[in-house]
Image (tube, rainbow, N blue to C red; front, side, top):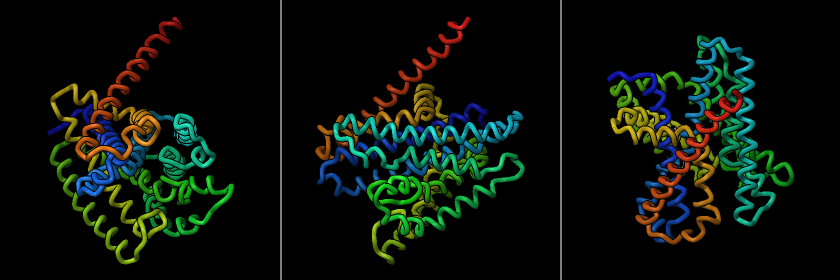
Length: 355
């Protein structure tokens, strides 16, 4: 079953929307479920689904970089200009991460230097984009070997870097937390998360190409499920053998990152399959959410872990928490639609005003 180029774009956007759904579902259920609900095996299933979001966003950001670089090369755009724009975008994401930390701390009424300087998801995505773009080569024919080497190298050194940074304290801790694991300050340090974005760049052509037919999407999906099971088993075996908790400083993080990346690519396949759903309102809504995944991330967090979600914190049975999470996703979808509508109107008004 052949697809149009538009459908291929929609498949990747829908994959991002699926990641937003998994993110909102997990964050809401994690924040709102009662202690009794957290003992349910279904809570662990939802946690597994939610753990796909971060590697998924990183991998798809890499896919976007890879496809964008190739498109710019075909248009004859100077590589220095492309690189400069992508590096600037990455640095803007890092700055946005600090701005979001500050805004969330002010809303919660408990701002502290540690909460503002915490290295979170936006910082990890932004710094990963900068490093990947600096390593990536422009001409399409040169292949993706530099980013493959970056992905493999980041995974290989991750446990050693994590061990070296765990005891960093004082004024250097917030800076170190951007690049390596510092307990209490790092959620998505550059090492190892850059490996997932580098993998996305390397797999960009495949991610776009498999959208062309259902057989390819199904085959990739089956391969991803099998590979994820193997990587997760290796992660569990490493943890049980060596002991300790799963952190970026534990050797098991290598298999955990592989598992996350594989499940993220499974989402790409699912997005391609769902792009063929004939019901247009579904596709429109999910494509919109996928293209505004950053906005969706920013607006849902205060309802889960901030003051706005405090009335529901750790109080709901699991089924009710899931239902409330789906309501929150619907509200996020509506907010995205309103934001994009205003943005489109502003774009139409500005040229008219200039005339």
